[in-house]
Length: 176
Image (tube, rainbow, N blue to C red; front, side):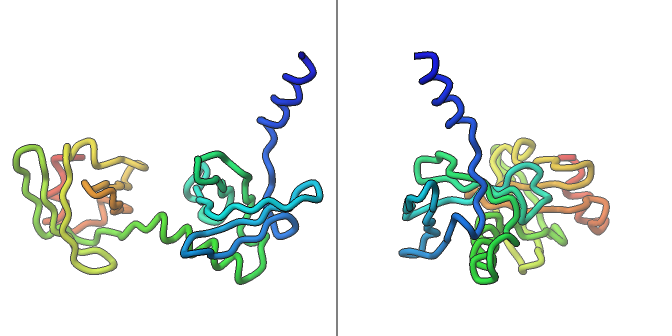
């Protein structure tokens, strides 16, 4: 019984390194799919999810790959370990998942009944969005960097609040 527990613990603690020697990714029915080759066997996953591991600043390193039940399959140490097309596919999937426009200017900000209504200019163009519980929806990611989560789950970033123009800074100052 003790030996069985040791084997189970060893399997649970083992991290499978995914690279071009044992993993192949492709798009299948508009979803990212994986074929994993391990111990002479092939296992297919019709839908997998990519998650950046800590720290998030390493955009293409330490990428966790999990199945539809959120069970980790393995870890990509570096996307560059894959050939060009596969690396590009993985980067595209991560960029889609972690899409986060940068706010350049805050043109209007109003608060009513526990919601705040924003009109901003981002690096992608003009956008309007709503926050519920504004103080909790603005995350201080670093000393001067903010990540803003709207009611629809969209993310926006202000890389440096000191870089905002004076009018924009005045509108957000209360929440800092």
